[in-house]
Amino acid sequence: MKVLIVYHSEHHDNTKKLVEAIAGQGDVTLLNASENSNLNWSDYDLIGFASGIYYQKFHKDILDSAGKNLPLGKKVFFLYTCGMKRNSYTDAIRQIAEAKKAQIVGSYGCLGFDTFGPFKLVGGIAKGHPDDKDISDALNFFVKFYNMV
Ligand SMILES: Cc1cc2nc3c(=O)[nH]c(=O)nc-3n(C[C@H](O)[C@H](O)[C@H](O)COP(=O)(O)O)c2cc1C
Image (tube, rainbow, N blue to C red; front, side, top):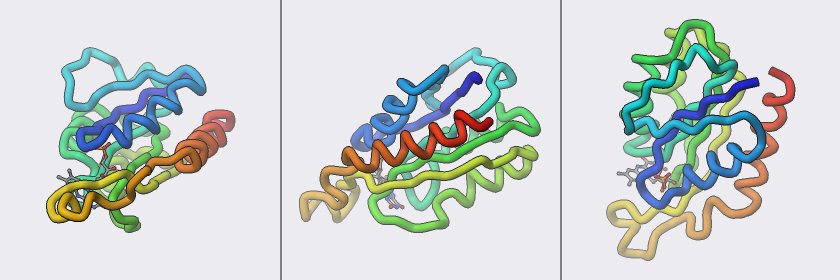
């Protein structure tokens, strides 16, 4: 099974740590959503969207790229890192996927070191995340449906 993960990670490479660990688990291509690419998304059986959370959402480049390039009816999953946990962070990407009749196979989020804005003054929050457990949980999350899809 061929997997494409479209990602954006700009703050502390928190999300990049997760997607790079996952990329070692199978036939996984990583695509930086902010770079130009000629990849044909139809060639992939499963498409992941992975992002830090910026202003309550996946990064705009992920949302734009999904709106533009996600073919109809794909299997998709979501992955994110955030300074503070909240369930609504996948709402915007989920809406786009649903409009493309995607089958959403799962979603995984964990904390990621955050020094944005006032948090910088206190040395940041979610220090040390993603940690080894966050990464191994992400791998388990991925492997479960990678083997099923
Ligand atoms: C501009 C900006 C906005 C952010 N907004 C949020 C937010 O709304 N909620 C949250 O939990 N974390 C927020 N964060 C923290 C990041 O989501 C968190 O540090 C994440 O792990 C960054 O991932 P990255 O290192 O892959 O970019 C924000 C960080 C930045 C830089």
